Image: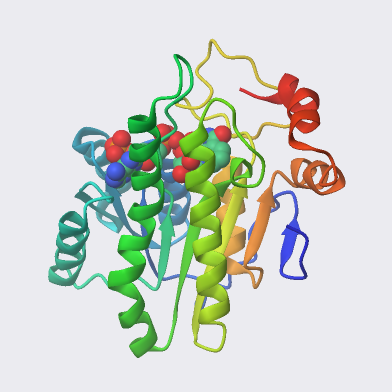
Length: 269
Ligand SMILES: NC(=O)c1ccc[n+]([C@@H]2O[C@H](COP(=O)([O-])OP(=O)(O)OC[C@H]3O[C@@H](n4cnc5c(N)ncnc54)[C@H](OP(=O)(O)O)[C@@H]3O)[C@@H](O)[C@H]2O)c1
């Protein structure tokens, strides 16, 4: 993880420039959690947002709250036909995003009752393909327009094993490495590929009220959204958030996986 283009940091107000920093952004996974918080913040900050998720009701509710600066498509981002339709819907609305946040993801446990390979397959398909499908369709446009950035929402489980979510850890490792590879491939182009590695974020799906969490390590969806906005506005291409967790990961990089799991278990979901 340690590299000159990687930085762990805590969140302060983003340094977005009033004209250059605002534009049109497409965000996947805006029906709940981090994506929903991000859509709200970006609209309130002057961006036009196009949201994507499978559940229509929460998207419609968000549109009522945010007004005409928020549009959406109901789609399964892991299905190439749905992704093609989303892009057609944006074209018809003359919505041309220059920033794309690929945040959609699922986290089902796949080892609760023995290893469920069908669950692992599904989570890998959703978490990896939903991002790569959009990159495949939108990258040629960004290249010909001469600007654009893709942000992948990954996890520290893409760096260390997750005994409850074998497919999840594999999916986030694949997503991160795909984006790092795209960054190396396109670093001379005007298009940027960035990765956000999140530690624990207290969204309802990941931390229901019944599940305890460490206040030292966990952050709110609103704080996570701010961290994504800083990543969008800045030059770094890989960020770990919260920064404290990022440093703990770096300092313990030499620990074998089993020792790391034992030490970190009290802080995990
Ligand atoms: N919370 C954490 O501790 C944490 C830590 C590390 C990384 N992350 C990552 O952060 C991202 C957001 O997670 P969250 O905590 O905000 O969870 P969340 O509330 O469950 O949000 C996930 C979003 O992804 C959407 N989604 C799932 N599958 C989709 C599909 N096939 N097509 C389109 N949209 C889809 C969901 O909407 P629909 O169900 O309506 O489709 C939902 O809006 C995920 O990628 C997650 O892996 C979270």
